[in-house]
Amino acid sequence: MSIKSNLLDILSQLPEGVKLIAVSKFHPNEAIIEAYEAGQRIFGENKVQEMTEKYETLPKDIQWHFIGHLQTNKIKYIVPYVSMIHGIDSYKLLCEVNKQAEKVGRVIPCLLQIHIAQEETKFGFSFDECREMLAREEWKKLTNISIQGLMGMATYTDSSKQIETEFCSLSSFFTEIKQEYFAQKQDFKELSMGMSHDYALAIAKGSTLVRVGSKIFGERVY
Image (cartoon, rainbow, N blue to C red; front, side):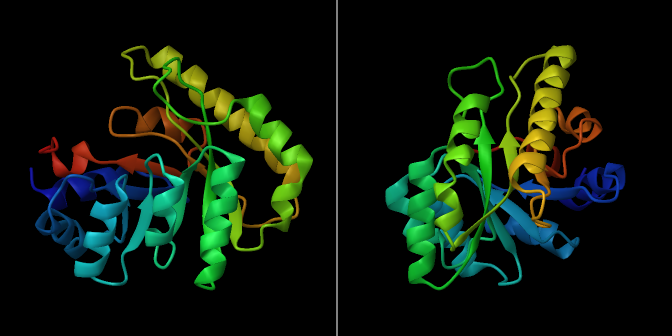
């Protein structure tokens, strides 16, 4: 199967209102161009240097989503062009994105990353940490970021029941947070969950952004 046919197959499965992020990390520009020529415009990367190099050499109407763990000292390199940052896992990081975005005169769409997996290796706020941060309301003074939803990764497991439970918990938390803090904000609407192996389960639980890589591009070459 070609990248184009893989892509079109996945797009045909997505309900209205669900967007596909083609996860292009570790894949060459040629692969991205093949997906681009098939109509894909949103791509996801998790390394700042790799994403910046691709931004500089690929068509400028591509929307770049940063989906990895972001270090504060690297933010300045992506704020001029990034379309969305998925992995905001601390208030400190949110402040630094705001600071760097202000320097370039942009408002950066961000998602708060919530830790829902049974794995210690995943990053993110716990539900309580996120509630505490939002309740303090200091984030409302950050005028160069726009919190537009939540992101989470389920445990990498063969148990679809466990994955469903974790996605369900994030979906419920999204509803709670929206009602409590973002009821008046039209752009708080994104729930980024689901990858190549579990995106169908994520969509069933309310995901609006699915991050699919290997099902489009094949296994990565490291």
